[in-house]
Amino acid sequence: MKPILLENLYIKVNKNNLDQKLRYNDGGNVHMDFHGATNTTIEFIINKYGIDTMNDIFKKVGNNVYKDIKDHIKKGNIKMLAKHWQHFFDRENADYNISINDEEIILTVNRCTAYEHVRKLVGNVSPNFCDQTIKTNEALAENTPYEIKTEILGEAACRQTIRKRV
Picture: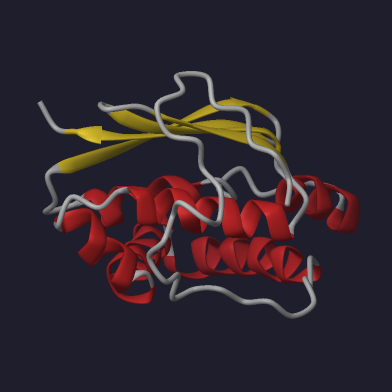
């Protein structure tokens, strides 16, 4: 298991103490080319139908595809989102860390392997590629006691923070 650096350590995240069953737990081969297809699809939809349609699709992903995670967030169990992040970033061998304290969970992605793979595969990444994270996170938080802020820190890097709304 890849170790996770926790900056504001109250709870060390590992597979043993995030005891809820993760619904989205693919364990097969990682097909990184999926991200290239996603990048191309984002560009196609925006060019043909507009950015609002693309954002509506991302919202549906947050509300419907990740409904189980959203239900956990509604109930105050934000650790399920951290477990989801950990599972997928470990699978893709990303450079990231998760920090958990009483007030918030912060995912810092130092090197997003999806972004880097798309750049290698097709040359240029859609300027809207990271919208899938931003808009899906917004939908996950909508109508819950929490907000999820996504900050783009540079190419292939971001910080995602979930905390109680004020």
